[in-house]
Picture 1 (spheres, rainbow, N blue to C red):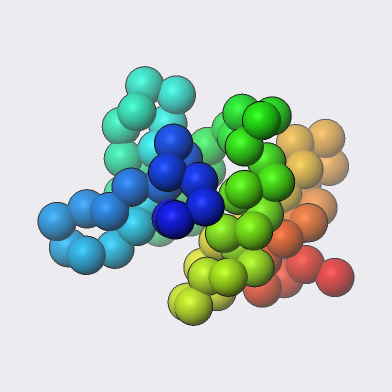
Picture 2 (cartoon, one colour):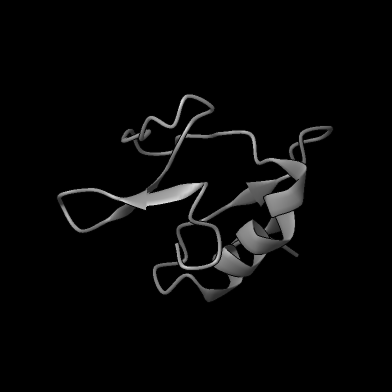
Amino acid sequence: MQYARPVFEMDLDGLAYVKDEADELLLEPGARTRVPLDLVTDVIASAKECPGNCIHVARISDGKEIAGPDAS
């Protein structure tokens, strides 16, 4: 969350969630959102540093995970 505050936000439960384009938290497991181009590097850094290994960053074109626990 510290790398990409426009994309992630803490909820009352103490967990960080992604936000959609309308700035609403997406609370359901596996939620996805588009990342603005200027924040892609920050979101990738977030995935690499996430202590829970729960951030997955995938390309839109083919769905291949480029950062996160399943990235190769």
